[in-house]
Length: 200
Image 1 (cartoon, helix red, strand yellow):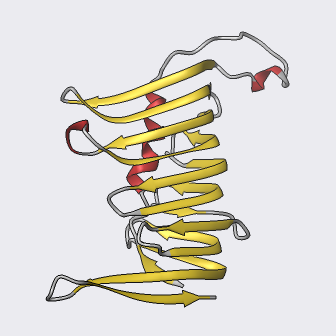
Image 2 (cartoon, rainbow, N blue to C red; image 1 turned 45 degrees about the vertical axis):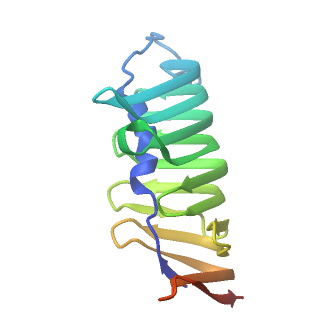
């Protein structure tokens, strides 16, 4: 099943702002097990991106680890917010238990309870794992991962194996699709009409 949405491709890139942190520690020569030690560890991190004195994004994480040789940054128990016009309103927010950011490609994998809320698109996405491929602008879950999508008007979709394309603004499930789609239309008398379609 397919439908049109904005799969929040710019929102996930908020996490990529963290790569601007350039501090590192040199552990010297080490054996293979010690090479897995991070070059930089930070706890209780708050990162705010500002443009023209207005905040445009904020990321908070309990722990951030950066691995220079692997080009990877890992986050634990993080939340993020993207602000709208002049930083007055939160347009998008979300978080997860863990995330891994590929510093070179911009690819991101979020796991352990992922939740995204996009105010401008009136959409909430919940799943256990979500992956962003920066080059192709594809947002996806594992083939068997359950996904829930909600809208404020009562529309609700559930399915497995979500793939969303940011360029075409479309998404589809691989299987297990169910839910209720509510389409609202304005009547000439300014009355609201709802069309309810149940899926199984």
